[in-house]
Image (tube, rainbow, N blue to C red):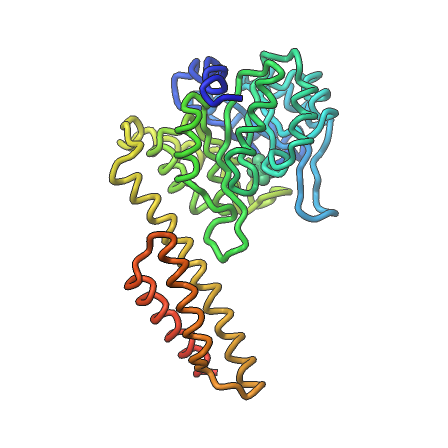
Length: 358
Ligand code: PEP
Ligand code: MN
């Protein structure tokens, strides 16, 4: 689908009716009716409009808690009836959709692992045909593929589902990182240039994987004028059955949200200014540092290997050949010889120091 047509097909009315930025909150997983009711009751409805709880949980490994299943939908319906909050859950196949619809769940989100699978997304879209009133939020796929993400939106638009939004929950990285899922503000910036009308929500909980980083990520989301936040909250976070490290109490959430609405970055038009560019640069630097750490770990292994095999640490032939290769690669990417040579001399020296210490 052409980007302009796609962009103009998106119905933003569902999010524009809120007088504050959208906040979706609630536990990672529904555990008991008492747990979700208590959490929901403690959320301040003047800040939180949508209550979330996972009923079916995609877990990396089997034999973990995989969600309470269909009985949780009844609890969610009761939360809606008693608190007046809209309710949201994750769906991952046609059966989930059918059940969620039968309990009148207002917002359905597609998890990061599901977005990565075109068959799954198509199955979900097909099963939503004729349900134009539903709000569908599509989390970013686990790997940073903008076209795959947009493709998922196209599958819903193709079925007449226009009340859409996306959730930035970060991307998988195998590197040493302070994040559970690396945010990619620059990718999101490009994404929004392609589809400026799509509501964008940030999920600091799954980006950070801890409680401590949530506020900073939420501030950055405000800086970029995201349309809302999804933050996990739990009446007793330490005893949560999933994602215990990253959930906060409803009281703590309120404190954060007050701080955010008070922060002056909230309503500025700052898409391409100094602060934004600095955020992009910092993001790249953090990635560089994580890569450096990986490189140093391998240097250490190299040192151990060379020592055992009695090989000299400095190998001039290898150094010459890699430098030649890197200078050529750098040139093709517009990087000056000086920069490349300087950086690699330093890295090489440090690697030899590490190996010498072994
Ligand atoms: C969740 O929101 O609880 C969840 C499982 O999210 P994600 O798909 O981002 O991992
Ligand atoms: Mn979670």
